[in-house]
Length: 213
Ligand SMILES: *Cc1c(COP(=O)(O)O)cnc(C)c1O
Image (cartoon, rainbow, N blue to C red):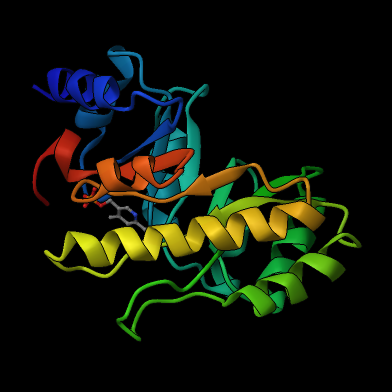
């Protein structure tokens, strides 16, 4: 069941967008089923759940932290996390850098850009992102490799498309002066086809693979 859904999702990623299988709230059996079907990148949004799963599941899984991350919780995932999607402050970047150094690692991060109409979603605007990118070059144990965004939760496909197109524009613009930006994380179960059409290089898909939560 999971492996079939995984395969049909992968087929639709006609471009070379990479797939983060969002396994939050799902048991290890579900993750192992996707793993057996070849999936290696999994995303979680709670540090404790992420750390618990990473400890018992195969070591070659790449774990992504996709949700909002609190500074005080960085230490729980710093030893192993491979990409943090939702970075939105200098304070958080500094903490990730510090914990990465303690673990003798360099941790890849994406800056979260606010593109939705809803004000409850986190994220930066382009100027704020630029203001983090410049000094981040002095932090030796983090690497900002791209941007992430979430569109408004709506049935209005034109609005979703506009929001993703806006994020792509911000990405292209920042990339002209920050060539290390290579990853554009946008698109979830309900909107990933639109996201890919608008230039996504990484989609985060949960319910379309694992079923409803
Ligand atoms: C839960 C979550 C997803 C996946 O959502 P689905 O609708 O289940 O695909 C993607 N991104 C983030 C940040 C999430 O929290």
